[in-house]
Length: 286
Image (cartoon, one colour):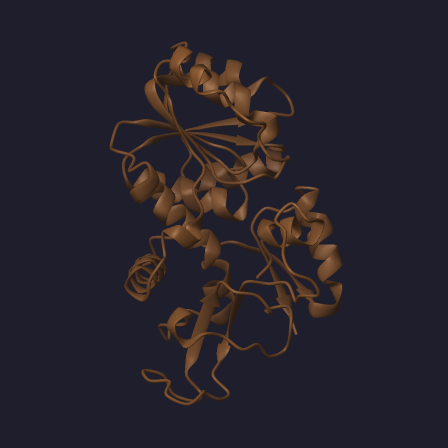
């Protein structure tokens, strides 16, 4: 699986010790197990969504961070639903548990995480405002269930949300994986005691924010979560992954795979992702 975090590590935004092999996500079959490993067997279908080394034909993984796959979930879907599916799940269910009738704004709603977020927010009964960059992406956001879709390439998204919402500050929670370019507009849309959830930096990291700005905006909340604090521990990982896989098996979550690249073309995958040319999950195939 290819994720924005791979590009952040490559660029140095997220420092890592070098040299290193990128790639958190992988799915496949177990070839061998270390001494003392229990609960798995050689040949079993499994997936992992953390660590490093997945840009390879074979990778080693810690047994306590590997999850088994239901037989009805293909490898490509398992990878596509790994980080992005669990991210959407924790954002909607834990970071800000959106309630029926609440209004949420989801940026990059046609992307891998964004489109899953739309579906999960709609399942919770929320009214979803979604931003995209092209009309083709607008169709993808609508197909996921978004109630209101804004093409930010054509209009000011904040003005559009206000008009559609009928209020100056109509939004209860913003789920934002874009970062710098949409932060100010997003914050201005939050109702009193609303929450800004900034979980990604696709347009660059958000500049430091004074706590006084949250006060003057209406006692706002802001958080910068990461998936790995929501799957900390074996039980938390299994619960989160199991919930996502159950949605897929039951037909309640549509996981869209945009395209698959050859492993040697990983640089092209990074370029396309950073240029925001994609509308779903990117995979590498050895």
